[in-house]
Image 1 (tube, rainbow, N blue to C red):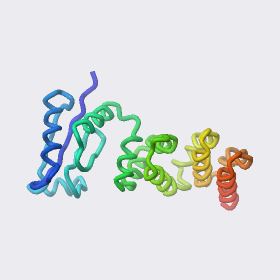
Image 2: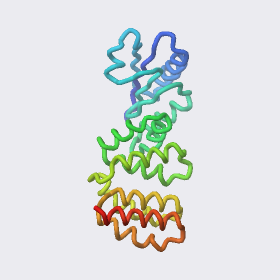
Image 3: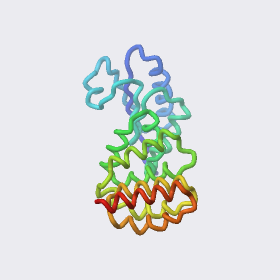
Image 4: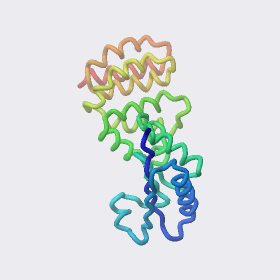
Length: 212
C-alpha cells in the first residue's frame, strides 16, 4: 500500500484563510488521506518561514508540492492524489507559473532534469493557460545551449511534426535554442510546412544554428 503523503502548513495569527485550510487538512488527516500534519505559526517561529523562503500564508507543503494561498477541500484532495504518484509535474508547474513563480519551476527542472517533460506536457496540452505557455517559453530560453536542452532534441524533433501548427512552431523555436547542429535535420523539413509561421520559425532557427 502506498504511503500517504504528509503535510506541513504555515499559518499566521490574524490570517483570514489559514483557519479554513487548517480545518480542511486536519479533517484529511483524521480520514486517513494524509499521514501527518505539522502546523507552524510563523509569527511565533519566523525562522522556519525564512528557512523555507515563505513570504505569505497559508502555505502548504504537500508531498513534493508547495501550495500558496487559500485551497478548498476539493483542491487539497486533488493535490493529495497527485502527491501519491508525482511523476507528472505539469499541473504543479502550471500552478506555479500562473502564480508568477517561474523561477521556482526553472529551479526544479535544473535540479531534476526529467521534469523537463512536464514543460512539454504543458506545451502540448490544449487546456494549458496562456501564462503557463509563456512560462514554458521563458524557461526554455533560459536553458538555451544547455546540455539539458540538447538532450531533448529528439523529443522536440517529434513535436516539430505535431498536428497542431502552434506546437510545431514552438518546437522549431526551441530546436534553434538548443544551439546544436543535430537539430538541423528536424528543422529543414519544416521549411516546406503548410503553415507560414512554422516555416518562418524553422528558417529563423536554422539561421541561428548556422551562425554558431
